[in-house]
Image (cartoon, rainbow, N blue to C red; front, side, top):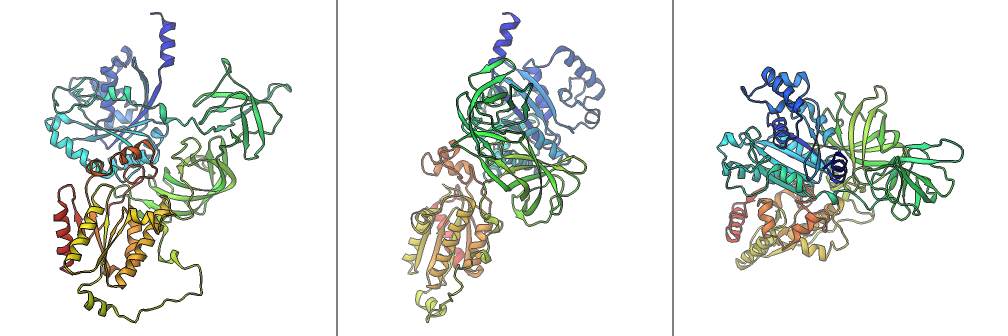
Length: 633
């Protein structure tokens, strides 16, 4: 086969970009070195250089130190850690790859975010001896924020734990419990030994209990064609080409969607409409352009189009606004300031702006949110930006190209942060409090019953409480709620269940599943429960209530003295098995949006009154534990 034929075949291969991440010394560089070495992806001169460097810097005795394939900086070889992002290209008969080997040390988290910004897949390495560490969680959270659609959890150094299946299973369980709180749809676990080569390119004979694919096989076969947005045309104009007075073309990279000659397009932000005359590249005119092609276009009409404008389809336009709501990864030693102007660079447009509000900072270990006035190096928070000019954008989870931006210091010209734009909602669930729920009318007053709560307790024979059941779909909330109601009723106590699905068919049938609408659903349920408590009824609420702030709101409405929080702690894999058939699959495929545990987070309760491991407890045991708790108060 001649060289031209080989090059033509290589052009037809699709490209997978992936990033490696994990804690320090988890073996990221060694894994990449092993992947390149065993797949014959290292040239002979490179291999000779690595052998020479191994004799000087290597840490594996007389063997080749494969970590040195990517650890190219002198400081990295001296310390044995990765500092900067190292990029490597290699190819196999099935696919082309670009690897970003990112740092593991917390100090270089911003470098990891840079390497992951264009990735299709993220490999999170976990040391089998150490388990899931803080940096493992930090990098998973950043991966989720950046919308990387595929995650491979490579449990490395299996040779140091005697290739134990129990150790591997425990790490998978711990990681799954954390990932269930994030918007992570596709996670694959692979036990490997980068040093020995187990399950990297060749199937390991040391782990016969593992029947999945090797790392390379998974990288070659993971489906990425649907990762690109080919629906929403977004063509940011980067340069106006005017070689002479007879020609005007507009150059740029297709961010998403497709563009063809003859199509009607709109110029954003002016709103002027025209038709595409030609689409061209250095190789000539094209019938169609799609991401990530860099092309030029001409239009049939003479219209005013400038750098920073965007071409879109007439009936599919982005949002245009001066105010954006975004998650921000801060990358500067100087903290983010609410009193400072920055440059906001999004697609080909740069405008000045400032942070008008910092909603909260996220603790990447617990995913809890805290009110802060600044963000420091490597911290992540949710901010509102007010810009000097409107920009055209889409939510990041729909379009990574138009939903992302960088923050640039106006004085030093350094990039100090990266942002991912969120769907705009009037208020975030974390901001909901009692003060936000004031009645619209100022002419209403509270009315009190002539029957005291003491009289109701004496009549009913029990103190009215609200038992709030929270947990993932499939954890058993509804089943336990109705069995508990039956048990209490049979014992002569007045009880009633408010079920989440019934609420969606009744008093919350007008609500969707955005963060704010979920918060409003919980507020209504809590108000109903409070009224039932005032009537002397033991109320059992069965709601996902995935956010800690929602449950805190319910506690405030119902009253701390009457609120009993019960956390059903079944892990995600067990909930998948027990939930309604197909519901998790529909969520993973995107058919169901904002599904808790798959594409929407679940925040585990901080201090629940009762924890029920319903994957271990029967329904009877769970009900008995709740009743035993009620008898003690």
